[in-house]
Length: 115
Image (cartoon, rainbow, N blue to C red; front, side, top):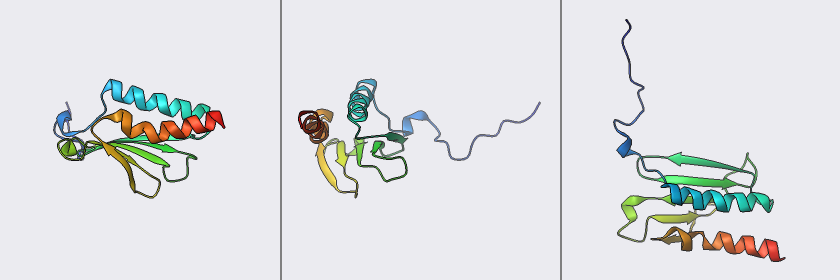
């Protein structure tokens, strides 16, 4: 029998990784699907780290993300754990609830559909 060697960069336990709850991810992916249907977004990426989880939406796959939706539980008691971050890294909206943080993107989608 051989010996089992653990992978070097994996966290010791899954609790050290921030993730999205099923309802949160469902809401984000629903918005992503509507933006794809409108022709505004083409690709996405999800990152789960020790301090934050993020969902990045891209206009084209080779660019930097147009929007990043971040969840940082450490900021829950302060300005809110949810943040909408723009293409250049500026925080566009921050809050305690996901819905109001996604509102600027949803408003943009309504303008595209009406226009």
